[in-house]
Length: 103
Image 1 (cartoon, rainbow, N blue to C red):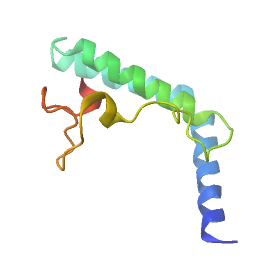
Image 2: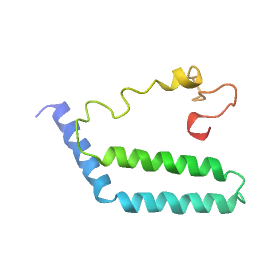
Image 3: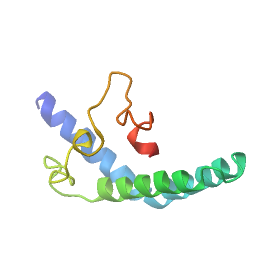
Image 4: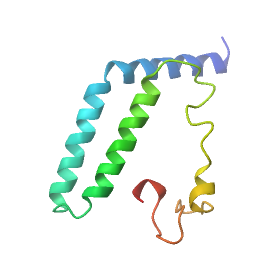
């Protein structure tokens, strides 16, 4: 068993764990979002909801068994193509100064 086979086995285990606990993960994301909304008095409610949706989509996508050698978003344009080039500090959009997951 080579290194690649071990990694594939670990990926499969992680995928199964996410599939088995999908509801718990999404529930925890919802609780955290509600707590963040409460702490910020709803100031960032839209951004928090958007991040929660993206996390839920990621959980759904990762939990689906299939050909993991081809990412589900293989046809999507790269982040740099939508928002500009990535910088060394992780800021993708120099216009807003925020990472892409918070836009």
